[in-house]
Length: 129
Image (cartoon, rainbow, N blue to C red; front, side, top):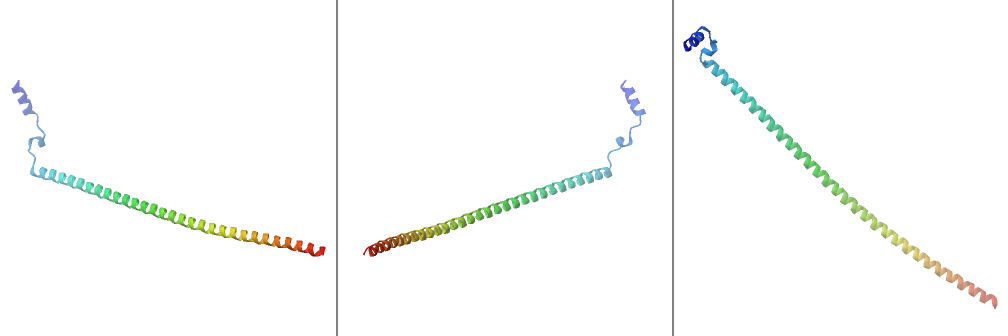
């Protein structure tokens, strides 16, 4: 039976590639393709690395810009509060001056009323004599 398997194998022609050992040309082609794949993979990895670095840099710039905008807003708020505080002080001073002027006018009015009253009293006294 072993002999019949050998006879059968001998009778079937094998594929030429299977019978011949890989040639130096095939090895060189295989190495060239492998090198090409490795170069392409290295290129892709470098592109991804550069893309990631650019994205990180862009994100960092956006964060810096946002921080600068926040700082500018804080400064604007501080300036607005200072302006509001200054305006409130000015208004308080105006109110105080207006109150002083009102008091002065009230005092003057009271003085004038007293003079008129005195004048009327004197007038009555004079008329009686």
